Length: 281
Image 1 (spheres, rainbow, N blue to C red):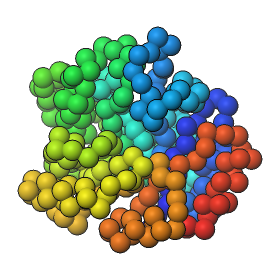
Image 2 (image 1 turned 180 degrees about the horizontal axis):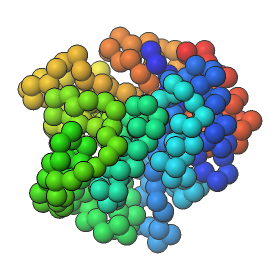
Image 3 (image 1 turned 90 degrees about the vertical axis):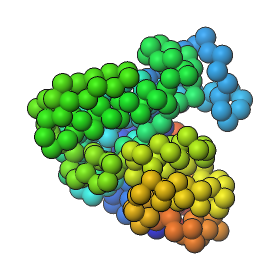
Image 4 (image 1 turned 45 degrees about the vertical axis):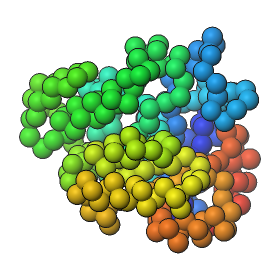
């Protein structure tokens, strides 16, 4: 099983370059970074985990800039977002950022897509909360048009782009309905999420990895009904606090990669946790 990590990198934590070098030297498979552009102080949306919102949410580094630094000092380390709030981006700009990072890293990028939980943050980006999933779906389709091998126009409900010359292209070739880097959608199990995964992604990024015994057969059924190759489905439990029995259970379910949670801390503490996680490599 490949073991990757995720961390809220901030202006107060271990630096991306130092962490990336340590991960590759120790044999970890990848580094995934979350995204929040800002956290409005006048927030009424509750923190999904309960209690006060942790300090790091309002201090996160831009994931694409941080991953660009990580790419520059590594050769094989996977690079990913967990997750990119696609609805909060201009899709033409985002398509260029993604393709550039994937190109410069030699195809090492995984796009984790999510729809968010913070109503106020999304509103400041002009996103109507009830539209966020369909808006994200529409923006993914627009980006696929820009990543296509030939100039391809797109006209959607929320945006459009003319047939254009748009380079570089992501390294991975189109597969089924998916164009672009490996794409995983995060979120809780449910019919709408699973339909979107089968429509335009390579798989699922379940936060915490709970309930997979029940939900995986459902996702596999939706995937098969959409005509997708059963062997191609990727399920990557995300932000997991590890235990030997838990990882063994994932392996029994056919899961080949898991992303472990690191603390949003300084170098000494983070490297100590990496030493502890090394037993799972």
